[in-house]
Length: 529
Image (tube, rainbow, N blue to C red):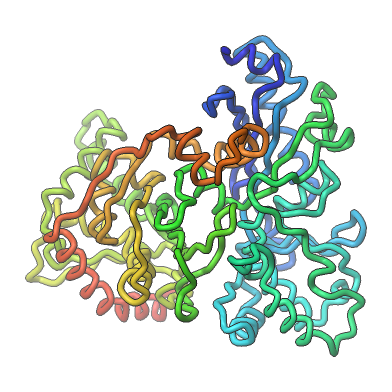
């Protein structure tokens, strides 16, 4: 069935993801291939010292994104979207959206806010579990510590994806992966950790609130479970033109970490994925719980409830982009025609000719602070001594290493201290745009084979569309991992690059210099306004 007939028959599936700078919609066909897209650009606002998006911006953005998709479908296929086989919503995880009835009690506090330090530290100690600043439970407890008046009125607390899903279906639910970024999830029960919930309720009991924690949290659902249907009101909230009909199944809403795992086919235990662009993070799906909590590691779950160790880094390719721009300016100075893609390709490929340890050169890509290494502010630095091998190949290799240096520190805990085993790691993002180069560097950093698939660039909107398809098209009742392997990716494992012993040893030598030089980075932060 061609795309037009798929849409006309109501068999297309829609995925929408709210990213931090863009809301993206992807329409897929019965073979899980994208057939149309839509998007809306938006920005967070700093209001009263906290980063937020208004509820008006959320709904305008969703409606504009869907309208863009609808217009593109009309233009491409000359057909109107009347109904769909399924819909899924996902969004950036964590944050704080408290409600009384349908009224939000304070403006949405996003994952980006760092005012929750005291709460996160106290909860980490109480739970004996690393509770990051951006998690919903940190925001809730910080509001309690700050004696904010609204807390006693909370009837429902959710994430951005959970909010949108609730408003269009009437269901107060959340996919388990997104739920695991509110408060830790027990991988055995696949819902909120009962011991931690009890500890939290006891902690806040003296406040005398009318609610307990489970009273206000959304119900946690596994991938594939029934999460409700688009209501008539919900259909109009999505499609203001009135063409879209109610009654469409909607999958459990998920976070962007979960949709990234799905889009890279990395939900099975002993697999993982690395996203490397403006920022970077790795997600390694574990076979068992870690022996102890680590501040560098955030613990979340896959959309079907397997435990995942996440290393999140604030910086990745921005400093490389700044240096490439400098080379571009030099070419323009000489009157040369500049092809940006060719420039990136040439500079990335010359790095392969550099020494495995970059000849002693170090790069710190800290455009902003990097909590993993204890830096609360950033100063991009290029560091060399007089005796280092300073040439273009080592220069570029050092920057490519530096872009994933922090990521390596976190993953070294998993592989060297916790002895985690992994069979396949998928790479996606701008770092891997030039074929092979980024793969080689990351393979050396993690001492593991790295694969890249063409479809990895489709992103989280495609991932949540696949999860919506899993609800309605899983006739064989396959596990999510098997469904992705057999139905979606059909044996496509991408192109794999394995590290050589020399590359691994060279990256380790680079990291010894990198760790020793962190004092230089700290001094730069301390001594420059």
